Length: 277
Image (cartoon, rainbow, N blue to C red; front, side):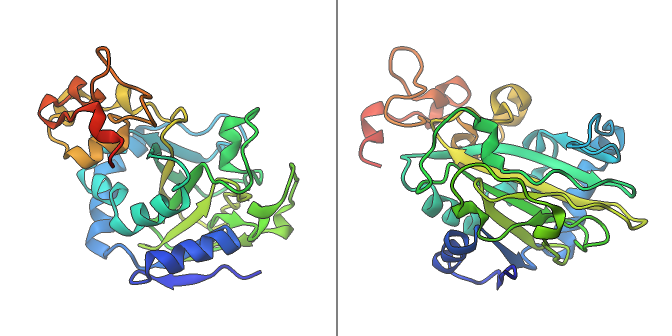
């Protein structure tokens, strides 16, 4: 099954429809060259200092660095992309809220071997989620062209509908080739994995994931973003990070108050208002 490509002007409805049908979709040319260069410059010092992976899954020739909100103002804008959030809201609409799950910059270096084909929802092994309801929406933003040779993420379209656990070979997957500035969207139930980089260049990307508000985040936003940064962020991003209720009365502070008071008391609203949202 081929991977569908849509334009950045596509409606949230058409993107969500593709995700529900295939489990994945590519939006072409969402970021400009200037935006790509800016976020790459922001993250370059951290990526150059990041260690290579210590096992095959993380990649012995792959470097990773998180905490994008604290490290890159441009990444904050990408995290808050209106189209991606609109589609995420549709896919996770069975939950009362959704939140940021993971932010990560990734360099897949020459010589990196292919990653095991897996599902992002495996973060929550032991939880018996309904196949009808997604819990995670993942996005991989290409900062360089993604080609089969440099390790483009490999996906198994349609695999999000399978019941039970499966093992897939690389030959059963498709490379999500795309131009720099494009984004691959997929659900937490889709089987996927980084390809092998047999080229002589680094494949650079951002991984940004979202999950329903009542699950534990993979990246702890409360601990990795310092207070001096939190004081500069807009309310919408703070609430997406988790300074918000994760469901009815999940996560309140001080006997029943809006958790955002922990960082920005001026944004507080009565808990009773949440039922009206």
